[in-house]
Length: 62
Image 1 (cartoon, one colour):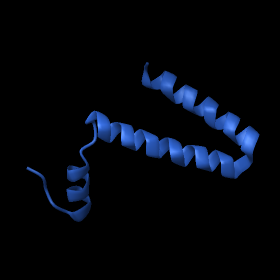
Image 2 (cartoon, helix red, strand yellow; image 1 turned 135 degrees about the horizontal axis):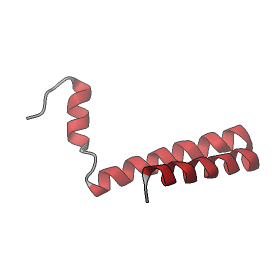
Image 3 (tube, helix red, strand yellow; image 1 turned 120 degrees about the horizontal axis):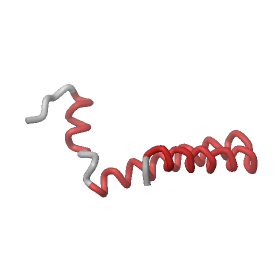
Image 4 (cartoon, helix red, strand yellow; image 1 turned 120 degrees about the vertical axis):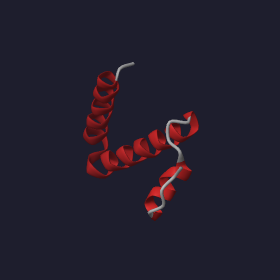
């Protein structure tokens, strides 16, 4: 799937959540979706948590 298709599907899902559950339901779906994306990126190896924490602390990684 392309990034455009994934973004479009995410937008549609968030719109349905906003219609069905209101603002707080929309916000909960958005936050849980971001957490799921973060966990998926870590699990697949696309995101290195150690390098991320080193960058947050101001350290340079080799």
